[in-house]
Image 1 (cartoon, helix red, strand yellow):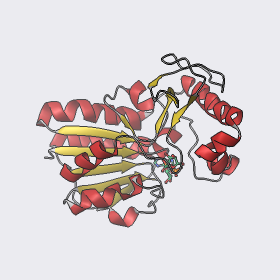
Image 2: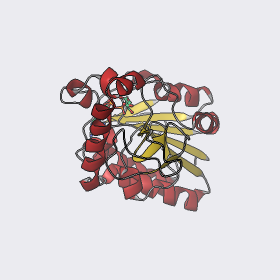
Image 3: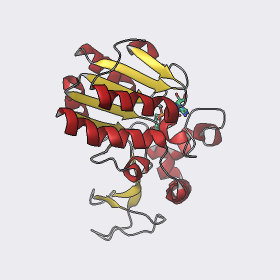
Image 4: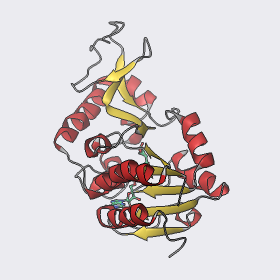
Length: 242
Ligand code: APR
């Protein structure tokens, strides 16, 4: 049985719900230049383009629904603590709302959220579901200084202190659908491993940091993850290797 489980998700968990991943032949970063839409410099150069890029994504996720992998994690978060008195924390790099829609709670969105906005003037972040423009006013300070609440390249991910604490005490670390090329998330397995946690990755293929994990379960997360979660809830434990 595990006492503290930490889950990390990436774009791959939402791929089967129809949200494009970042790195693949048809991925977002093949269609757009990262420096244009995912850096502060790009936003300063062309704020209208960047607002519109995230407006389009914010609109597009409205119709997207969670797949069996998101649902399995919500089940794990609910049932494992009930049955075994353990903690199950969910950290996501995803900016979509599919974990929320699946019923997960207390989700750590380390790279921000599409359904949130950040005021550069007063620093407040708040839920936001409309389109934003450089002229949109902050509902708190009324300045026209809103930006998408997304952590861009070169910026500090949210809640890093809390995440580190969780990693340093965890005994099971699971990463799902992440390529393992963007730090600090790509380094989470090494931290968990250093404190003796069992580390398991779910992906279509070994990620860039796949060798740091005890083992990987390769295939569609919508298939591999629900099986793993069912067993974990039923037996309390997971295989130590494959
Ligand atoms: N099941 C499991 N894994 C999958 C599936 C699937 N159905 N489909 C794709 N994958 C895997 C891919 O093999 C790939 O390793 O998901 C991973 C997606 O990788 P990326 O597109 O790089 O997404 P992610 O790791 O979340 O990116 C990290 O980079 O661009 C930034 O801020 C952005 O949060 C993002 C971060």
